[in-house]
Structure formats: C-alpha cells, structure tokens
Image (cartoon, rainbow, N blue to C red; front, top):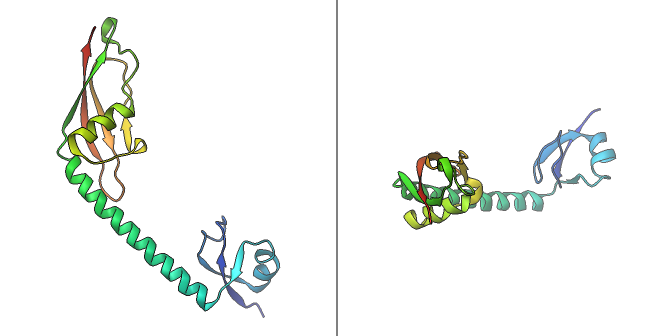
Length: 154
C-alpha cells in the first residue's frame, strides 16, 4: 500500500517547495530520504499552529508595506521632473554620469519619501539634456519622470 505522509520543509527544495510549506509525499521517499537528510520534519499540531502564526505575521508585514507604498506613490506622483546640475566638457559630454545617489537625494528633497537604490531604473546618458527614469514601488505601479541635466562649467 502506497500511503502518503505530510511533512514540513526545513529549507527550500527545488522539486517540493519552499521553507515552512507543508507537503504530502510517499511514505518511503519521506522516511528514507527527506527526513534523514534534514530536508523535512514530521508535522505536529504545534508546528501547524506555529506556521499559522508566522503566516499571520507575514500577512501583517505585507499589509504594512502596501500602505507605505501607497503613501509613497501619492508623494512621488507629484514629481514630474528633476533638475540636476553637472559639469560638462566639449560637445556637452558629462564629467562622470548621473548616478542613483543624485536622484535619491533629489527625490527625498522633493517628496520626503525614502527610496532605495535598487528601486531606481535610469537610462544611462553621457550628455547633458533630458533623461527618463523610473521608480519601482512594491505592490504599486511604477512612476516615470524626467531628469533635466543642466551644464555647469566652473
């Protein structure tokens, strides 16, 4: 008879699922391979209760992040363009380039919302002019705006 048993994954496993998920596998596979190699544990009522509690905490975190993203979205939608002054050489080529720090500084100044470097996507340009940039917010739509690079020579 080929009975299945329920187990909890201790770590991510390609074919079975992610950590802390409850899986149902054949008895021989679970007892002879998964348990001895430390991939799974046998499920108990306390563990199910603990997993439910962890899931509720995770849901609260996601809800908090969603509300924070919506507030940031409202503030960032007010930004239509950003002005940055950079030194230029011949043919309006920039010395250096526009980096994420410059944009983060300006966005924080204009909107008082904190964004991270990994949320910004910039089209690289070596010339003064207009660039387009995008801020990716989790659980929300992306925000597009223009960056105006003005030449400054000293």
